[in-house]
Structure formats: C-alpha cells, structure tokens
Image (cartoon, rainbow over all chains, first blue to last red; front, side):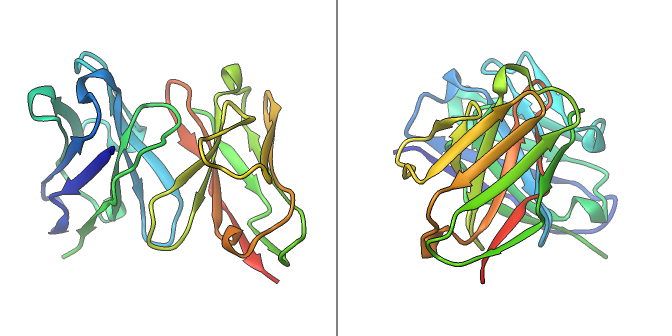
Amino acid sequence: EVELVESGGGLVQPGGSLRLSCAASGFTFSSYWMSWVRQAPGKGLEWVANIKQDGSEKYYVDSVKGRFTISRDNAKNSLYLQMNSLRAEDTAVYYCARGSGYVIYWGQGTLVTVSS
Amino acid sequence: EIVLTQSPGTLSLSPGERATLSCRASQSVSSSYLAWYQQKPGQAPRLLIYGASSRATGIPDRFSGSGSGTDFTLTISRLEPEDFAVYYCQQYGISPSFGQGTKLEIK
C-alpha cells in the first residue's frame, strides 16, 4: 500500500526557516517524480515544486523560487522541502504527492504557519 | 504560466440532479494534460479524471470528463449525497497549475 507521511510543519516567524520531510513507502520511490503541493487555509490548491527521479531536474512555482529547495534521498525513500525566508503568505497545509503530473497518491499534509 | 478559471464558483443542486463544472485555460493545454479532483473538508484531494476524459481507478461512471484545447468540463450525471464537495481542475504540463475550485453544495 502506498503511503506518504509528511512531517516538520509548525509555527515559524516571518523570515524564518523550516524543513519539511515526506517518508514514502509501498512503492519504488526512486522510480517516480515527486512533488509538493500546498493549500492555504480556506483556499485552493497550489503546486509548489517537483523533482525528477534522480534529482537532476527541479521546478518551482515563481512565488517560491530562490527561497524553497526541493530535494530527495532515494536511499531513505524521503522527499524534502527546505523553506527559507518564510512569509505570511506561505502559511498552508503542505502535501507530499507522488508524481509530477496528475496525482493519485497524496500524503495527509503538514501545516506550516508563518506568524509573529 | 497557464491560468485555469473554473466556473461557477458555487453550484447549488439537489441529489439526483446533473452537475456540469467548467474549467477554462488561458492557453491551450498540451496533449489534454487536464485532471479533475474532488476534495472534502480535512482530506487530501482525490483524483477523478486524468487526460481530460479518463476515469481514475475506482471512480464511479457517473463522473465523466470532456474537452480539449482551452475548454474542459466535468459532468456528474446523477448526484449522490457523497458528491457534494469542492472540485479542482489541474493542468499538468511543465509548470502545473490548479483552478480556484468549484464548490458543489446541496440545495
């Protein structure tokens, strides 16, 4: 059974940093693109970033370029999102997702709150 | 960046009725890389349709997708009580994006 479990969310001050993790199981992690998608409270979905199987290609939504870094460790079946220079508008539930196109498998999400 | 605009913002219908949800893209969506999702409160999205018209595994056949280019439609033929939720379209080209959502509520 495919499982994606996010962790690392929490309350952080504006300008601060946070690192999200996603532990994957139930499939061959190294064979899939992976993505992060976020959802601000009461708002719609926003694709944030994705990464190729070997980490050689990474893409970001314009609003996070230069501040967020997506990475992966295939030996640990884990996906990461390093978030720096956080802003109030980054407040959202962050979902880990398998694939870079349409998404069948999603994690349960981890809440990031940026507030002083 | 492709901007997706969904309409209506809210759709009020009764169980048994037919629902038609629209998704319009600011430019042509290549190879019909268009998906539809259902999301209920406190849950992750659930894939319904991919490739504009292919149903995902386990999705009832009352859900159907159509369209190409810049205009796409999700149709729910006969609404069941569990269908009332928020629906999102997504284009999954090089820089994926989602529509703002349509809330389907019970009339």
